[in-house]
Length: 68
Image 1 (cartoon, rainbow, N blue to C red):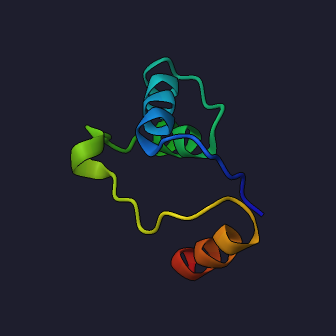
Image 2: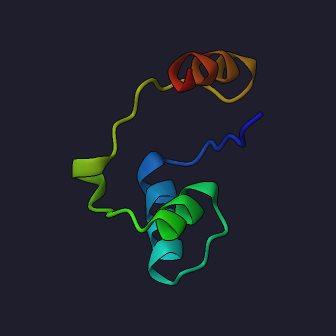
């Protein structure tokens, strides 16, 4: 299963972008962007929160739904 975070989505996104800019693929997202040379941009134009919920089994169900 995937990792879950209770942190604000903007804070998480900034961390991933920092990893991309420094070619530090510590997250799966940063690694994917670096390896495939995808473009990335501002959170306001590239990021969409699909559903806000608490961490745990409830979030697992929503992740499975949206990832499929």
